[in-house]
Length: 488
Image (tube, rainbow, N blue to C red; front, side, top):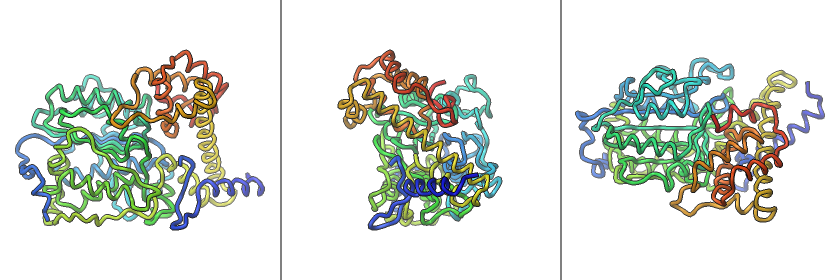
């Protein structure tokens, strides 16, 4: 049990971490610092006689503090189901450790907004737990049943007249997307899979919605035109994306939840789908509405929603990919965005700290729950400090104390991919993690630094020597465990 002095000191530190007052608003600031659409449509919005709609939904995280990602995916499933897609054509990846988690105040139920209905009911459990892998995701996209390991066996068995919708939500970093299992997804590997899918001639067009920090880096300079792929991302190549409906926001989740219920970009496109007639609303119109809502006029939080690939596809109607709820057939599209952003948002990388802090704050004094929350928050913060300091030291050892920080922070020109040699990046990440422990979901933010080390011509041997000097050891707690790393 904490003595009074220790508890008091801890609370002061935690308060300093999570709360500041701006001259305009109170907000959380954490360490990571007219059927009018028809005229724009393709004229064939109501023609569903040719081709099949396919959808792949993937939540790339685990842990109750990441509640929002699985909530996002479950909500997306409900939209597709109401839109008329069949379960045989909807493939769901999620770790499935949220609905019946001991932290969940409503066992068996997942919500995606403060007053939302249960979005978990009826969701297919195609790939759960350790079946949620990059390998299975790629096999599903390519329709390769023989390459699967576990799961329902469902794949995108599409034909040349079919349309495919992919939605991914999780943590990310420059050039990488998280998964609840290792290895993570590197941008070049994902783009290669999309190119193979196009070369197979097994789709008419493909739409990819991506929620992650630095999500633009997955497509920037990598996704060529001519693949009949249209992609939008929650953020550009250099910024975080944001959680929403979090403790301390307005509107906030019910007080017993202690976690963010959704992600800002994801909630924006899905709540738009919930109320609009998608036979007449185009991808471009939704992009504009989502962009406005996600950016937020307050300026402190929010991100820049981006679009990549074959932008000409954006004149097509959403119905062609996600169907439409018949209950919305009489909706008249308005350019004005009636779905306003909430008053606050939380950086994706800080949502775990918000959960641990809210849990600590509400737990009875001296209880096992309070002690557990203190331990979780302390270990998460210590891991962040270790990773941040280790990367900085590696940069200084490789390039000198003055030049090192500048090299690590450099950004490639717009339109250029993150790194010149992806194999180098993967090798240097493995080398760093071997000596310093897992980067984990937080450490993804440093992928640009490691890419810059590659771009500067450094080799594995130099990275190994610098990492060994920077990290004579690494913490033993779960955040640094190598099973959370990027490498298989």
